[in-house]
Length: 530
Image (tube, rainbow, N blue to C red; front, top):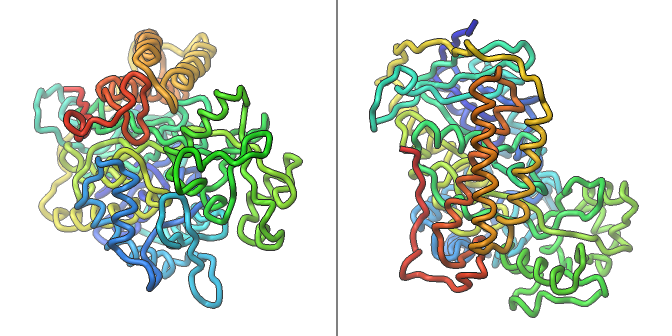
């Protein structure tokens, strides 16, 4: 049996984009937020570095815009970047009003600097910025009578005309089907407006800095519903995650390099000067490729990040979380260098949106990492992601507010139908296929690619897709099965996008086409299912 819920606004995801939008949308009606796990499980909660914004008198909009465009390697939408940079500072101030406790020094915001930035402009809460932002927004959302948060609800599909068996190119989103994983009951959530804020797709790869919930659900659902997807080949690998068998790719924030951290090979020698004049403060794509090259050239499993030359008290004050976590693994970062390796960190592509977070499906919006606003281009500038979530979720609210009175919520849709399906006999198939897909992506669609590697990945993912789809059609739905299906779909989109881009640009580097080609590829990679 399927329970029907009707609401003005449905938000899928409970990170900064979803909650900031939900709090604003609550001004115009009822908001239902669904989230896969507990409400605090999100990519936001794992974000260490901070929020980049022009908040110092010596900084300028022009400088932040130039840094963003430079990192984006020619593919940024300049208009989107200008919106991001010019509107961003006001939203950081709004977070402060909502109770976010940013780190201060002498009564003023302490502004850090990270790779690719020409100024100190990163507002942060020590080295746990995302956690502090999430805390404050969740508290406000919990206090708001118009916001209802449903935990342990996994989205199955976006509801569109196709569920009425209508064939149309003008697609509208009417909400989503979801599964309550605590009760195993289906929910049909009908809404005037739907916001996709599902975060990233880190678990498409074997090694990632992302939380377990980041399985690409929003991109996969939107693609299946007919939305345009842009630039999925641009996968950002964070250059520095802790190398330790028990650390599970624990992130060592970019701010450590901004603080003065130096990258060294295992024999203690610096190497970044060979790759970029900015040395250890170069943008992430350059740093990640440099580390990858040094490791392969030397046959090493990791490189070191060294801040032992900085005062012990400053290290502990600036990076208390990293200091404590590394200490748990027997590494005192005030006296010992930190072993680090790159890991999948962020997807610069996603569901294509305009400047008001509108997707190519009517009444469906997308914000945060799931979206491709045009801000990041071929490579995201450090700490622009939380800012992007704030700016474009606010712009989505402005659009929803303007349309709210003219949109009705009176179309009826069938319940979710699972007739003819059976309980799974072999859970091992799900776990095995998931690991196999992740391994293939790690091995063949990583920091350095080639035609041969991409073709190998394509064949393996296609086989897993066919096997998983057959299993999906005959098996009762579970969160694990839905995640596997989404991981494979997003893996396929990444590979397909990478094969289309026959050049090297930003985060996409291929040995077969090592040069940037502005004549043929100064454009977005566009995918759509129909």
